[in-house]
Length: 458
Image (cartoon, rainbow, N blue to C red; front, side, top):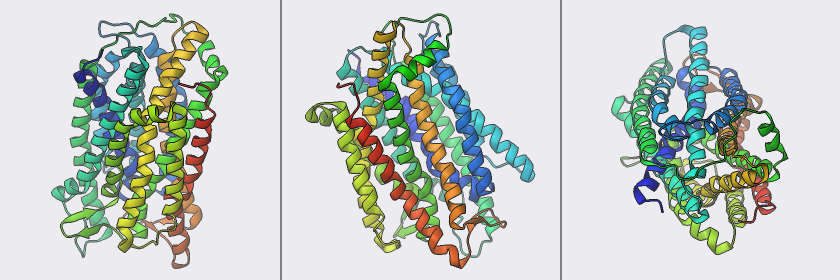
């Protein structure tokens, strides 16, 4: 029986990766690269797309390497222990804007972003695989997965809620009379300090996760590397379906997170101040994070109540689909902010319920693969979950860039922000609104249907 300390320790791993680094990368990066760093929309879209093609190779390879690791610290834990500092350091560098000129900045952005994806893979694939070797008990796996999601969403809430207040403490970019260039310089300083602060915290949490967890289950290891393992994945029907579901969940989240900053900037005319309370795009999404945290904790109970993981996942997807569709009909006006928050919170109820189930279901697929093939491929199986996360999140961000171009948006050369002709304004704003609502609806419906027909009935 795992201790409470170990469950909290395991939660710290996703608090760092999912609650800090990936949350900021999902929500802030499309906006950061275009409006703060100064890349064109096309450059930002191509960067995110190239990174995903990079992950298609590195994630499964990392899973296979992790499965064959042998050390005094175990199979998967050493990657967390020794990867923690590079993880935090490269994240901090990613939010720094160097004064290199247009070409130099483009090279810097591509290089550091690809390095970040590489170190994220080296830490997060073993972290996900760790769930498969900490316990053999299915209910305990659900508990670990639930702690993981609660940790990620709790820290995600703090990250997003504190984001604008940290910005204000570093420098106010909302002062009237500032030029676009001056605003951009202040924002570059803000993001640099935010990278340092959250990079340190993420590194410490990742290290703590590696030190506080234990590997109890002895796996049947395939000592020799073989491409047969990769072929076996595509013969594994539960894996194919679950990976498709994982991609859908991350497209669902990716569109919403990446569109939020554009929605506040161009549809709602900037931050909304209610007294001393600031509602910007990160705070807006933070309401959803705390909801996901609560319902991530409720997920094991909900799953037992409905009878299986696949049914619980399907019902949660229905909540996401209906509420996302409802968001589209809310008037595009800041005076309706509380209605927007309320509908977004309902969406987050569904996301909170299904999020722990995805990783628990990957553990089931790993067990199924071991029984079917005779050797463990836990790291390889879980790497597909990480790949789905990065693929869905960044491809959706890349598609957002191209959708905005199609709607008529261009980059303002004075400061790097978006601009559009008056005749394109409605089209661009409607596109942003749809990217936050209609696009996620399609993926919620798809993942709900796949969950309903998922073949493993646990």
